[in-house]
Length: 606
Ligand SMILES: Nc1ncnc2c1ncn2[C@@H]1O[C@H](COP(=O)(O)OP(=O)(O)OP(=O)(O)O)[C@@H](O)[C@H]1O
Image (tube, rainbow, N blue to C red):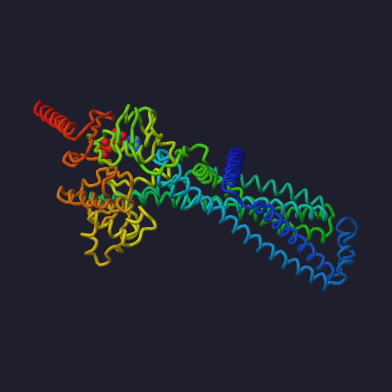
């Protein structure tokens, strides 16, 4: 059992070290950091060991036992010290200096190590956030939001702690080495006993240590589930309350919370064995040394010096074991941070190289096919044209693929086959920033962010003046409900925009699009929450404000599509028909009537 646990822990520590070093290579750290920390730690343990030795010399000097020290390394060291320091006062002064030096070195170590550790964590957080914004949209959809929150909120901080633990591990090893060398100069026999004793204590700690990595995995899973519950409560608060699900959600949250408490306690219990076990083990070892010293006629001074050194060594051994255990427990968290920041396994959208000044002629889909996954085609061999300067309407049943077409135009995804061409150039070859700067999109679900009405509209143009925002807001019909509020455009909107109706939220989205003043305007069911009269009024105001420009209008309402210059009817991911509204809209309506008639007949037949 002890071997198995030891192997698991050693494996976990090795995996942690591998992941941490990979992470550090990605985020980078000052080159001087690790050598400087090691030098400081080494000097600090040297000062400590020297200090203890000199304290013992001082005691020997003042108690006149110096003549009994005899020959050998220790005797020569004493002789050297006496000739250097001359008097007990000078020796005491040297000891004081060493104690001060050790304190200063330890302080410097902790300041540098925490500053580097925090910088590493900061870079990890920034990198995770950047990855989330840069990586292909499809990749994000496959990733849990709660996972991102966990990495940003908790796990990125642990990287600093892991780095701290590794440098401490190396310093602990240096201290153990320095103490061992000093012990060797005093008595090699005692060193052998101490080595055997330390190995035995370490083996006992393996018996007590549970499989730390498994526990780490468990803690990670529980924290993630807790995060999922919190996210769900935040995002679905209205639905939870509307369906009276508060008690059920509270029960689930309480269960996760209790599991988190138990897992944290198990972690703490595991670590808390280390202190008492090491102390008791050392006590036994020191007793054995005193006993054996008597049998082997090792002098009292030598035994006392060895015991004092070993007593001071004990915290280093204890810290060494704790750091090993900590690294083993941290392995799952380090792995998940690494998975987030590394770029090798992720897809990134193409950035394109060709500049785009203006949209002059047309946007053309040439035999475009696409599926969100390889096995389910959503769009099949689509070919159509969106002429510049005109309004083109996309109509089709729910799930036909209309929003997917918009997703391709926004370069959130790329076609599986075929090309989208902008004035004859392939969309993926055009500079992504150039293309997106020409587009404004607003849809049925407007993404409102924490901030004021002004902040929300300004998302379309960060440097927009107040007057521009008000003009855009008025053309989108926002003024009618915002200007009556006490704080008008400074009214705070929550992320969900709950204080505004669906139609009001849509109008804020439209104001954003107007402020952008785009070459290409995409309205994806952007007015479906407005009544027909208001929709008409808002559309006319926007047309007045923006003038004639390339517009893609996605709608279920055939009345809205009637004004478009061209209409494209999408059915099951294919173009069913395209042409002037007077031709396509009646065909589409006929199909709608057929579907309703067939469904009625089916109902009657049952
Ligand atoms: N992110 C996604 N991952 C996987 N499948 C998706 C994703 N988004 C949409 N789909 C699927 O693609 C198909 C087309 O969806 P899309 O949203 O384009 O339809 P739509 O015509 O815009 O529908 P609606 O009018 O209801 O908004 C649907 O079958 C839908 O389930």
